[in-house]
Length: 368
Ligand SMILES: [Zn+2]
Image 1 (cartoon, rainbow, N blue to C red):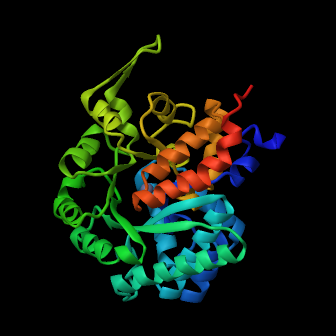
Image 2 (image 1 turned 120 degrees about the vertical axis):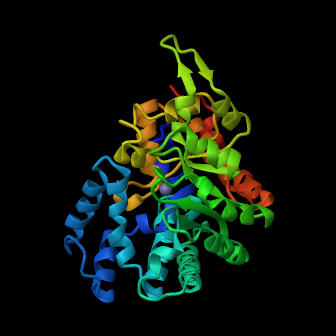
């Protein structure tokens, strides 16, 4: 078991992991993009060579701004406009996550982005749910188990949040576990969608909000104190409310203290943040400080295609940069499982019967 004493990429792939922030339209296999473009008649791809297209996605996403990063989604969404395409992408997503050792995932998407060819929102949601079910069956046939829920996003720049929130509640018993708003933060504060968040709350449903990625503390404050977000998508700018002195002393402002005291989960996506310029590098990423201060930090992929990453590779990058060991990987994983939008007894079951047994002999011995 010597290879399991250090969290190498290979060992991390076999560790049970939990993923809360992963976009369905950001995780397609490059080959699938090419094949779906051909079968659905989508003509907009920059190239139909699989390897070139794979590089193109990462380079375009690497441009340093959230707006350019979002442009890459024109192509993935462009090939996901039929029920078959949506189901295929969802099934492959489940297979890819399971192959990476993910045992619980919440995969999100905005149904309103897949209606260009006339699909109804309900048809989009049902196609994705059927794809997820198919993906789980394939994974089970290989002897593995994965639990996958979905989150419905409303796009901040559109005005359909209440409609999407209603759908999230309507489909909750079919596998939709929550609601989110996504898209450009600047100019679209979360308070524009108060009616949607209120609808979710009065129906005892769950939601997270993309906030504090490209935009600062005001966005986080609104998301929590005006909208009542249970989790923060990214939330990395909370670091702007923390004073760190050169001698290592830290002082939390009132908002940062509130987020930490209330154990509000931060869905942090390190590589994505570097690509969009929300952090200069992994080494300078606020996750190091936030984890040290014991915020409820979770590690996520955001968009596996655009970042060329997996959850295991995100952990490997953090291990390389911050020297994390298995105890840290387990801590991030349990943080994420505690923060999932499924029932308490189900969360506890995965923590006690899947996560802890796997990590137990690794974290009991101190690493050199
Ligand atoms: Zn995101």
